[in-house]
Image (tube, rainbow, N blue to C red):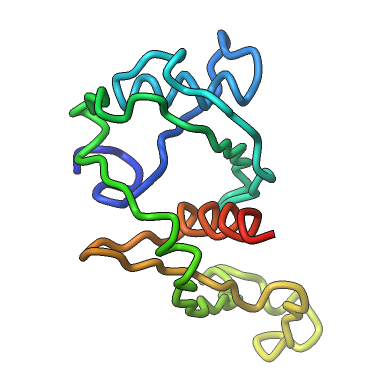
Length: 161
């Protein structure tokens, strides 16, 4: 709950690529070891998923892997409130709930409407992105949503193939 970004949200391990990270995969493994208190040799079968362009243009490079000894996880208390699992069968059998988030063009108070044809009645065009779908997985009183749900949905769609 003390994190700067997404306090209290359910998230996968992750963070920024550091100078010592040779690749995005190296970063993903490093961040996982730091947050879960495990050795990098405990993370095996690591494969990239498709990258995701998130809010504000951030690029996320998600990876999937297997933790050999999950009973040895000791979460970093500064970053992790709890660690839990959701059975793969549950995710394969239950689609996420999907809700739309609508976008609206709202010019700033000092926008120079007098400089454009149509002024305050200008018809703004938002052909490509009028809304986005926000997904929610609910399991055992927990809610996985946002970017984490998007990555999870992509992973589940690959498993179903």
